[in-house]
Amino acid sequence: LWANMGVALRKLDKQEAALAFTRRALELQPENTSFMTNAGNCLVALDRKDEALAYHETAARLSPDDFNIRLNYAFALREFLLLHHGAF
Image (tube, rainbow, N blue to C red; front, side, top):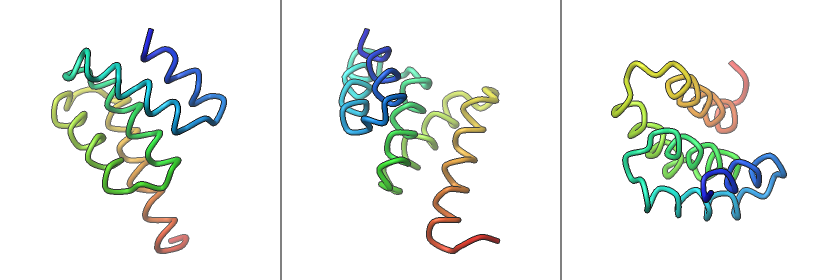
């Protein structure tokens, strides 16, 4: 329920609220890498680089073979690279 609310709020561009719901889901299932990725994506949208990358790095470390988790991590890295260094 908490994670579903987080996803729905992200789609409505309510990133802070989505993050709160996703973090609550992570309290209940701290090893859930999908929840970590969702939290990381919220933080990317909020331009909170260090926190975002920490979630994505942890998810990628715990699920190294999950293509979607690695792809989201790559998108986060790209977003911050473009945001802070311009197009390459």
